Length: 632
Image 1 (tube, rainbow, N blue to C red):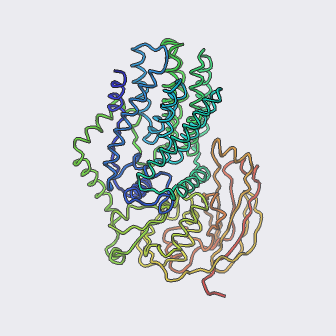
Image 2: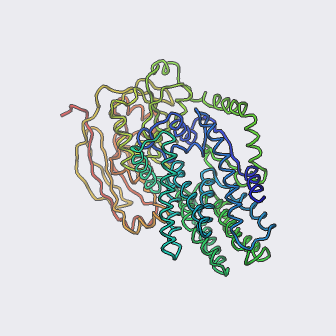
Image 3: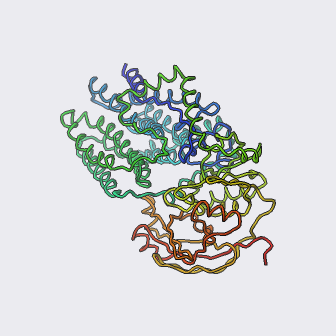
C-alpha cells in the first residue's frame, strides 16, 4: 500500500516531460548538439565530445529521431522507480508509525521533485545507495547492486555526476568496520557498475573499443571545467558561508541524536553533498540553486532518520532552523541567463502537481510536438542565411563556429560537426587538439559558418576572447579557410586547398610577473604567446575542494587603447593569438580577409585573487610567430 501511494505521488509530482524547442543562442545550441549526436548515432568520445553522454537527452530533450519516445519511457521509469525507492527507504527506517511513514513519503517525493532533471537521477541513486548502506543482509546488497547499475548508467547521462555516483559507492565500502562486508560491497560495486555501463553503452550503439575514448575525453572535460568555467558572484562569499553554516548545523543535529544509523546516513551523504557543492560553487550563477535543492533532499532524509528519536515536536523546529541558511543563497542567486533552457519553477511546481500536467501532455503528444515545432520554426527565422549563401553552400558539408548550431536546423544544412561543437566547452589542450585535428583532416567540412559572439562579436562567455577559447583549433581554421561571403552577422568560410601558414617559429621566452605590463616582440606575420603557470599544490587543493581562480589577460594596442579578456588557463600553453588582433566582429572579417588587425604592443596578466598571485608569483611566456607558407 505504501509503495503504491509513493508511486502515485511520484507520478503526480515529479514526472517531467518537456520538449525543448530549437531556438538560436548558446544553451539551446548546446542541447541541440548532443541531441543530434544521439539521434544520429555518432561515436561518443571520437566523432562527438560533450559534458553529457549518449543518454544526456534524457535530461534535456529535443524532437529529433527516436529521442522523444525514449524520453517518455525513461521519464515514466524514473518517476515509478523513485516512488518505489522512496517507499523502500521509508520502510527501512525503524520505529516510524504508519502516519509518519506516509508523511515522509510525501516529504521525500517533494524533495526529489524539486531537483533539476540531471539531479533527479542522482537523487534516485542516493536513495538506493543509502538503502543498501543502512540495510543488513541480502536486501542491503541487492539495493547496493541496483545503485551500482544506476551509477554505471548515469555515467552515460552526465559523466561528471556519474563519477560522483561511483565515488559515493566507493565511500560506502569504507564506512563499515567489517572487512568481509566491505569486500562484498566492493565486488558488487565493480560488477554492477560495469554491467550497467556496458549494457547501456552497447544498447546505444557503442563498441568495446569506444569505451576508452569516451572515458578519456570525458575526464578531460571534467578536469578542465573548474579553471575554465569558474564564476564568482558579487556576493558569492555569502552563499559559500551560508552553505558551510548549514552543513555545520546539520552535522551538529545528527551528532546529538543517539543513533548510529543516522550518523551512518550522514557519512553516506558526504560525497553526494561534495558533488553538489562543487557543482554550485565552481560556477556561482543559477547553479547555486543546485546545492540548495539538494540540501532539501538531504534534510528530508535526515528528517526521516531523526524522527524515531526526536519525534515531530523536536524535529520540526530543527528543520525550520536549518532552512534559514539554506534559503539565503536562494534569495541572492544570480539571475538565470536569457539563453537558459532549465525550468525556472522547479521548487514550486511539484506542489502544483507538475507531474499531472506533464502526464496530460502524453495524451495529446502529437499536438504538443506540433506546438513545439511551431515555436522552433518561428524562432529559427532569425538565423536564416541569405539566399546567396545557401546557394553557395548547396549540399556541401558545413560546420558552425563558435557555437550556434541553430543555423544548421534553420537552413537545412548538411552538418559535419567537429568533435566539440561549442568553443566555450573546450577546456584542455587534448580537447583543443581533437578539434584542430578535425579541421586539418581530409574530412573537414567544405564550409564553415562563423557567427558573431557576445558584446562586439569577438567575445565568448564570461568575457573570454573568442580566438583564445581553443588556440590550436583557431589556427587550423584561420590557416585553412578563406572568406566566401559575409554579412553583418555571419561570415561564410570555404576550405583552402593548402594551408595558409607555415609551422610556428620560436622567438624566445620570458618570465612575466602578475599585474605588470610587458612589451611583446614585434614580429612579421602573426604573434603567438604560449603561457604556462606553475600551479602550487595549495592552489590545486583549493581548486579541488572549491574552485580555480580566473586568469585575466589585458592587451595594449599601438593606438594606446586597452582591452581585458578572460583566458582559459589549460589552453594558454597552446599559443594565444595576439597580433594582429580583432576587437570587433567587423575587424574579425578584416583579419580573415587580409590578415589585418590591431597591433598589440604589450600585455598584462591579472589574477582574480591574491592567493593565485602569491602562490604562483610569475608566468612563463614563450613567443612564436606564424608566417605565410613559403615565405622566407
